[in-house]
Amino acid sequence: MDGTRNSLHFIQKRAFEVFNKEAKNTRYSSKQLLDKAFPAIPYSENKHVNVRGNKSPFDGDTTYWSERNSKLYDGETSKALKRQNHTCGHCGLRMFSEERVHLHHIDGNHNNWKTKNLLAIHESCHDYIHMSKGKP
Ligand SMILES: [Zn+2]
Ligand SMILES: [Zn+2]
Image (cartoon, rainbow, N blue to C red; front, side, top):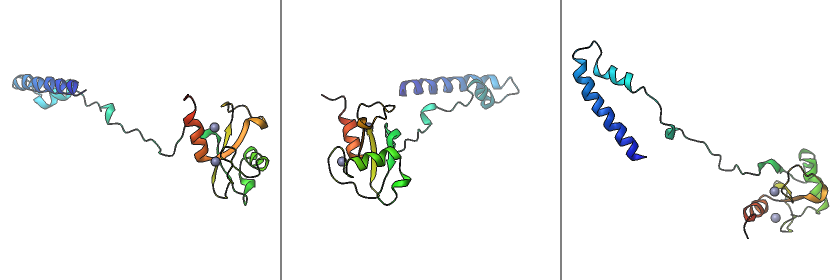
């Protein structure tokens, strides 16, 4: 990458010297000739890609839940929680209100909403399940 940039810089420097000589015989300044030859194109590498730190690849099944406000939460998640007696389907610990709860699709197919394919689990447990997937 640096080599490309350096050689481009070298070409521009050479061109500037050439244009400088030419500029004596034209109405353009060498700067204007240089701008014409090398239009300002922003380097794509300068574009900053904003990555949200809390974005995960399985955001699709994220929801929030608490016993107080269960009506605000996704119906399938609260149903799964009731089935599981408000415990995490992965580690078995109790879910607390205001805690982030994920609805995990056991077979990995987010279109499979059959009851036995749905598991309400802690966000951290969900991370663990997906991170350990594909590993022997
Ligand atoms: Zn858990
Ligand atoms: Zn999942």
